[in-house]
Image (cartoon, rainbow, N blue to C red):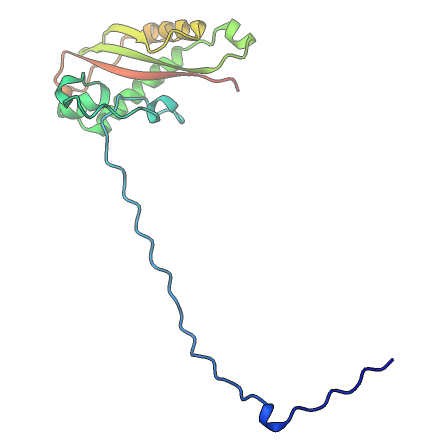
Length: 179
């Protein structure tokens, strides 16, 4: 079966080509540069690979005046005239010394226990260990091993001279991770 031929359109029905409007190049609006977050005082943490405890701290309550809360670690150093960079180097040194003395408890290895134990270390100006306390009591074997590692690593280097304090507290994570 053949299709019937299509009759040609009458001349008045033919449409003239309508010119398209000129194309305009649209530039995307420049994105605003990300602003760095305002520095918030926080307890120090050693610069370890992704220390979760150091990054996930709740903001201090707005009702408490800053002089009422105890100052620790980097915040104490910066407030005491020590640069944040100098305090970070000191805390990194603490972390490295403790990590070198850390021993993974055999039972924790068998049970595949992993985690990070944050310890608060009180150090005298001459580097002598005054006190060490864990931030949590569990897992018990890892906490005990962390306290032992801190005691074995002591004495520590003297506090930065620009700190001008008789003693200082530092929070240092002790990381236990199975390879």
